[in-house]
Length: 168
Image (cartoon, rainbow, N blue to C red; front, side, top):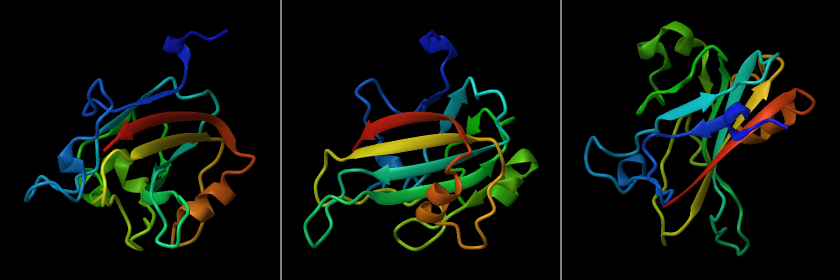
């Protein structure tokens, strides 16, 4: 049995012990310290991983018509497994950061724009689920990347999955 130390794990150095997402990663931050993508780190990427895909959702988002429907905050694909994480404020800066980061493709969130879009909530206490998928291939889902396309494309290609839940 693998110990916790050996498991594929996803963490964020910015999220405190209570698991709270700091304000600067949301639409409620101030000025330049607003809507930054949170820094992420991962450990023990499974053997055979050729790329990583990230999907972040507000799992407690109410749909105006009633039910709870997860709201997509961020989608990123073709993250090289050689990377050990994404720096704070990375979203929208793949080209600028360059190197191995340049191959990462960000998809549309539920605001219909690419990249991270932090929450602006009618009420607090929502849970945000960060899911990192280790895949045996790179994804080719066309120019417009969406959560739905990614979740369909990864079927049969997931060699590992790591999750991080935070609250805001």
